Image (cartoon, rainbow, N blue to C red):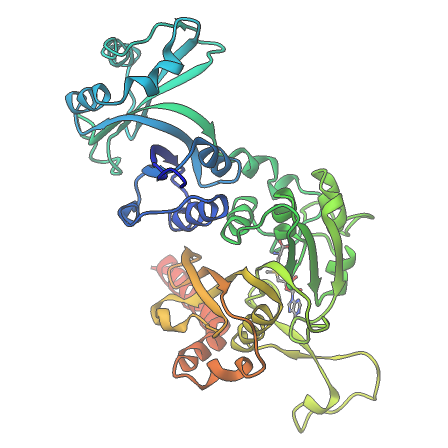
Length: 460
Ligand SMILES: C[S@@+](CC[C@H](N)C(=O)[O-])C[C@H]1O[C@@H](n2cnc3c(N)ncnc32)[C@H](O)[C@@H]1O
């Protein structure tokens, strides 16, 4: 019989950015590596300190090889609301778990980390001296220690109200750092090929993590643009594929998006972006194709679909049409093979996207996409649904006082059958979903009103 699985406690130090995206990221990654969240861990809120119970240090290390939302992870040896509570918790930590890291042949260093308060060097030294009762037998080595221990003090979240004493104090053995440096090394500022809507590097990695992208997966972006989301997925070892309706974008032609550059240079394309990061072997292809009319034959399966559809603000929402679809009264062009371009309502676009994902994802595969919303009218019922897809997470990123976009993650939980194609349209939930059609007008009416207000206050 397998021994009962015992959980060890770890402390995650989270980055204070994209707060809503953090829990789904950590949950998705843990489920990818065989860890699980317990209910008591649901209440993390805005704090940078999260206690996590997971079965092994290997899982902790795997988690840190992927996360961009967490800065570091520590094996938690003690925790208290006061120094006394911390020390008594440390005294209860099993010595046999400490000894391998404290024996006489080892070298170590102790660091003090504070959140929302800065300590003087003298105060830091006091904290270190107070830990004398721990059975440290190794030598201190500040430059290249074998083991690093940290005292982490939490002074709350309000910079205008910093308490004298910390709310919580933790002591742990540092295990690994997360992947925050990717935000800088993959920054779009230094990217070879960019466009007006190239996805921010940090968010691209978060999306790939929400999508549980892993080595050898096949990841598809139907609205690929300059391929920002493909770059992040390829970094995690997935083979990537994309389509875009815009010929110039796919072929890297036309006007450049950079200041001081008029036209895109030769080799400004998605393949070159992957090459820039040593990821070219993960490039499958990108095609000019309309997401409203997928050109895949039935039975094509992706492990993840990760995408940022157009909202019609900085790029148009267009789809190809036929001569027959042109409204009456508009003069028809002569028959030609060049498709007619029609406007593509956002609600139709999401309907097509969910249907396509339901049909073409592997069972257990994930769809991750951005949904633009007009916040005064947003309700959870507006989030498009499909009988084959389960909503995993829904996180808001504010864009302006009245608009935001929501990062929606869904998982395929049921095999697609033909009758699933329209079943969600029959439900009452489909009605609020139509509201997205008006996002563009509302966005611009908000801007128009704001400009008018600013002009008025400027005249006063
Ligand atoms: C928000 S951008 C994607 C940006 C991309 N994530 C990046 O990092 O560059 C949306 C893209 O969808 C494309 N698009 C618009 N309508 C489309 C359609 N019907 N089918 C496929 N692509 C479409 C636009 O040309 C645009 O490149």
